[in-house]
Image (cartoon, rainbow, N blue to C red; front, side, top):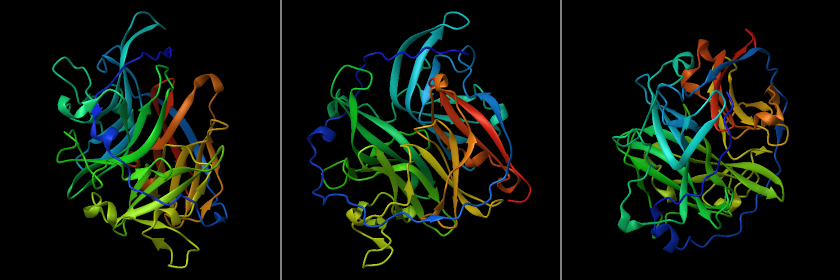
Length: 376
């Protein structure tokens, strides 16, 4: 299926407080340690196959014809919550032609399917009575202005509610790519489909500023009781690494409760000072996933390499690494415009021997099945 890329000029409602708030004063973010790379775990991939698109635009997914972000959160009842940084709406006019109507920034959907093989067209979007998808945040016109947008990143279900980390994006022009990230925030809701409330850090919505890592690129609720949150940052011009924060899940909404991995600092491995955070993975994209895989007996990172377009895997014995070098799982053609690969651990089976991930192709998410060999 061919979906033409179309970028309408639209404005979206976002809190005025985000414009007026002055981020907290911070020291320049400067990682203090070199990344250690562990010997690569012998990842033996038995097979990788495409299952198909997550959407069924001509059927039950109407009027949605594309979506990006595609982070999933296990809800514990067979359903998953999907966090989407944008949703494309439109209508198919022919076999390979689509008329795009617009784009909704920062949406959500719930998938009731328990298997990726039954997922196509099974997303129920947070939408109005006309099935038009709605932004994540409640639209109180007294608090909003049309200059910023929210891109949900990774999310998690905890005993105290549902949390979604998000990037605060600032528009500076009318072009499709005329925006930049100005910080990271966190939203919370009592129900998975919202409404979500933006948490404040003092008088600001910024938990982290634009010169700090974009925490929320990936997260892991680990068996040790900690919530680990990864964030990409520019290690140097054109080179990006990932830093690591952690917090107790019940305190995720408290900015002062976060600590940062800072191997090599005098105070120990974890520090309350984000400027002392150390890189844990090199050459990482803005979006990826991290899970613990019982079959591999290791933590597994899955991501899309920005240079080659390949879907790659890395493993580690701890959330902070040292992480192995990359193992290629899937190659994409340049004309496919692949982006945003992530594992969806809620669907893994056989103890992690079989995992599932999505890759966005021209704004359409596709599910893939990956099977590891019997003996890792």
